[in-house]
Amino acid sequence: MKGTYSKIPEFKSHLHLIIQAIEGFYINHIAASITLLLTVIEGIAREYCDNNSIKYNSSGSTSAFKAVLKNQKTIWCNEILFEKKYKLPGDYHEDVFLRRIDEGMDILISYEKYGLEYLYKSNSEHPLNRHSILHGVNKNFYIDINFYRLFSCLEALAFAISLNPFYYGADTPEEAIELLMRFEKLQKVSTLL
Image 1 (cartoon, rainbow, N blue to C red):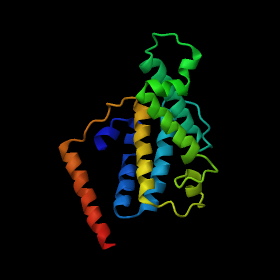
Image 2 (cartoon, one colour):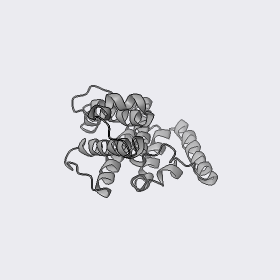
Image 3 (cartoon, one colour):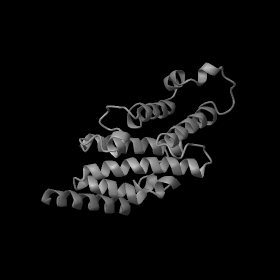
């Protein structure tokens, strides 16, 4: 995890918070972990927009997320998928077509759809909804599956920002063992709580 995220500047600056969220999860502070991951994901998206001069509405929670995905889908389509070599009809750039021909684009579109229809949608009844959690409406969000969903969103954001499915480098053996031992100790401690 440290190896992957430390290669992406916006993730590297949030790495200590990501680790705290995981540690909190291991000691059964699931509500705190989910809340922290929600803010980390939003912070990473905002930082990426700021670092890359991508315009977004800084007073809205959804805006940076939408801007990142829109920008990265365009880059993926033009520079990776079609390599700026082909002039294609407009309908070839629509999500319905693109997700059928490319797995990377399908990941980006699926993440965007999940974010806009569930995670960030103001009136969503989904059990993992940013607005209902951070505004205190949903008081039953602290279930394991929601932590795993958010961690999957974090992974999808790492792909969206790096646009490289092979960017993920394993931690050094020492770092991996250190984190594993740390999390195992936290699991043991959680049984005492």
